[in-house]
Image (cartoon, rainbow, N blue to C red):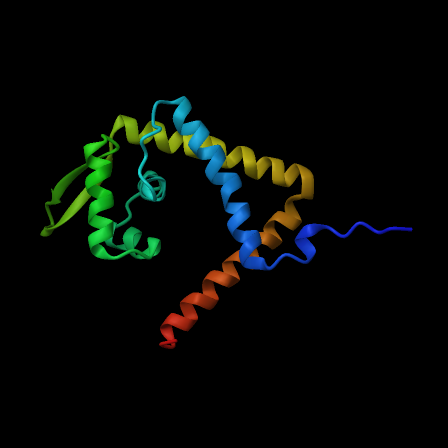
Length: 154
């Protein structure tokens, strides 16, 4: 009897992570196009999504992205020019900027959330909530490993 071995059992984890990420990315790009936001710059959804979740500092968002300050500034410039965010001087610290989502930015964030939630719901339907939470734990641990390595100077 021939046994079927699932591909995910032998493909290296980094390759699986890369391919899995495209499932979300493809769904989000399709959702953005449907609401007239097909010009979202690369990494722009990360910033827009982070801003939609509350009062996060731009510096923290850029640091989480893992890009240079210059690249982060260019990304913000593109988001401003394309009408996703507004930039203003921080009244508490004039050396800093405050970003707020425009109506277009909120529309993009909502489309992103709907697409993400649909994928998450499909995962739960196929695998169950426990397995999805376990996957989240594994990914969170990978993130912690990187953080701990950075803290240790590796």
